[in-house]
Length: 142
Image 1 (tube, rainbow, N blue to C red):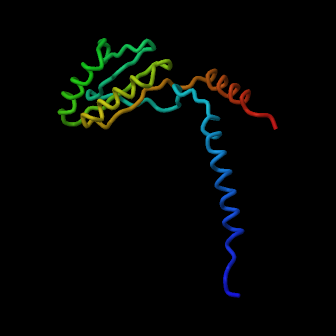
Image 2: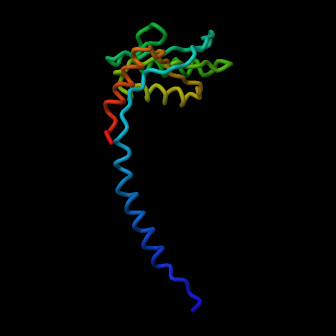
């Protein structure tokens, strides 16, 4: 008999497929994030940097001037025509809704501005100790 029986292999593959389909949604909800702190070197700011700040109440600032999303879009259109292209630095409060940040990023990208960065505060030793303690507290015991 020269035929190979592939039925057991198909059975195993279907069982693995079912396991992955059931396990995939469980993996997405297991990650808890606290993003605003990072350990990096501060980048020197040159004259071609636009600083956009977001406070926790949803107010938007161009450098230090209070502004609206429509005004930001108009200013970004003017800034996109400059050579070399300016960099955009986004400074957002921890409690800022991501929807507002995404609107500003989409407006910048639609104008062709691609150099976009986020400002963070450096970690302090007490903050890293607290985050480590929080991580250890949330780790399941074996």
